Image 1 (cartoon, rainbow, N blue to C red):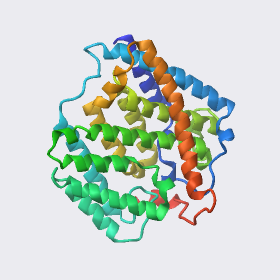
Image 2: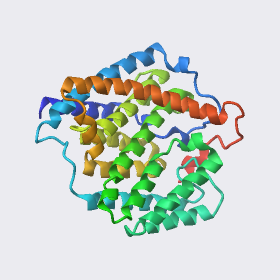
Image 3: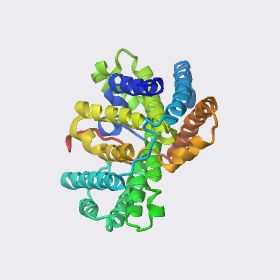
Length: 359
């Protein structure tokens, strides 16, 4: 195996085996939370430990993109786009159908385990979405159904809360374009799905830094999951692992499939600790990553890498972009929370302790 592959393969393997499962188990499904309360102050997030880990991951990202360029120049790499569009579509449709069938069977859930509802029409809409996955022509109907559920979730839980789940918007767009006969429109599907999923993951990473207190009771009950780290330091590290993987999946090329495989392994490992709640809740993400693995890089990835003429410049650009993206997501996360709850916190449902017992 070549040195360039060894770099990212080792990163993926180490992350998959070392990072404990709470790094990717959605904490709102298993522990109390309250999105109306302000997140940790920014100066409390930007601690010395945070900045040191930030620097380390920035250097790792720059090195990874240098390796990426070296790998992308070899014909044996994983940089080539897949040619099995039918399989990609089948994965997305079947995974989406299975997910909404599970929600229909459980009942009382809008899109994810902590989004509860007592309205009976939601379950029947979920059944309709699942049925629409049987044909490419009817996928647009399911897409509209997902958008209705997302809008309903916003009406019940707020924009900030539903900002955790842009992956559903990406799935809705993918499914809508699936029903169009135009090859040009269909060619945009995977790029949109990549963007939606990676934004979802990076947003979730910021949550680990902004609201680490939500996860602390879970870590106290399962101290082995921190591998000897203090709980606050573990949350910083876990957030950067998720953010770095998502950033590379959105912008990488030569070793993109290895990154997808590494992150998928971490998500699957979480199921062994958290059971069917985690399996069902993360099914849309795992489905998207399976399709992304089959497809590989999109034209978006190729275009991004065409801008740098040397490996060193690519690594330097990637490191700078990583830094800016982290601060951008921090700013938007805090801004959206403050815009919705900063002045007049709403009396919305704020805990989800029992959701794990309902699936």
